[in-house]
Amino acid sequence: MIIAVNTRLNKETQPEGYEEFLFSLLHHLTKNFPQHQFIYIFDTPFKNILFQKNVTPVVAGPKASSNLRLQYWFNYRIPAILRKYNADVFVSLEGICSLRTKVPQCLLLSDLSFLNYPELLKKSQAGFYRKFTSAFLAKAKSIATVSAFSKSLLASRYKINAEEIAVIKPAIDANFTPIDWEEKELVKEKYAEGKAYFLFSGNSSQRSNLINLLKAFTFFKKRQKSNMMLLIAGNADEAFKKELKTYKLRNEVKLLEGLDKAGLAKITAAAYAMVYPVFYDDMALAALQALQCNVPLVMSDSGSLPAVFGEAALYVNPESFEDIAQKMMLVFKDEDKAKELVKAGNELLLQHQPGKNADLLMECILKAANS
Image (cartoon, rainbow, N blue to C red; front, side, top):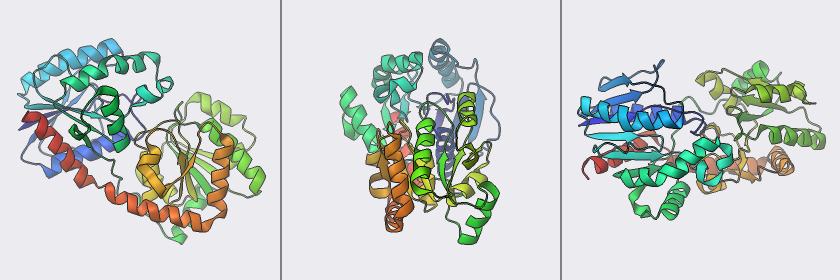
């Protein structure tokens, strides 16, 4: 079977860590099913991607940088490529179908912020998904999403039988693993002046809620009088960098940009706790990475997160920096509670296995192809 896959990515409309999730999923898919041929379709040149032997990468411009170009790319460029390579099925991994092809389609929706928090997207982007998602879902022969919460939301909003929607949960890279006490001390020396630290992992954006995190850290420091630091791992925009320069405790906050995966794994494993007070994130890959490193988790109560993480996290109202700070203090002072969170996290991670995810996606692909 020839399986064409949309590997075009718009990071502005996809959740944090989606690219890593996507290519990890595709790696296991192509490795587990070598009898099939895969066509990866990009809209810009790719780099630093290793492909299995059964993968043919195709670059098909123009870059889909606007809603009009996006529609042209999916409705004209994609059908032409599917015809050229005689594709049996098309897999779209960003919630968009081609409305002008008869090739059966498997659709994965990873982010539903346009329904719950449209203000986190550009108006044109939120409007595009609100306008066309119903048509995309009707066109798709099989549908998948990343959480049971998102599955329920799609089923109720678009009147779809929930049994027809598969759930493909994110898996975590094997680099993220617990480290011993000595290695933790080395990491703290390298990145945090030898001090214990809270960690936020993810790029700065409207979703990230980093200003409230800084306010919460100030509140925490006033109450606890500790030498704890705050590390923010990820690329920051100029607006946040400007804010950080005027922040009173800026010398106790480290912004770590450009970390490779190994470096991110080390600072995650050495963190006292992960604080993830985002406004919205259906995947929360950074939070899962922390759990895999046996790091306690403080996170937002928004969207699907409480349903996904259950008892593996302390939940905060992301709008309230006081609430964020209170939960930071709780995990800081209560070692037994921190251990409970880690234990619950270990149980939760049993549901996030990469091989199982690839098998589930293949089931969706075969369902579409055989429809």
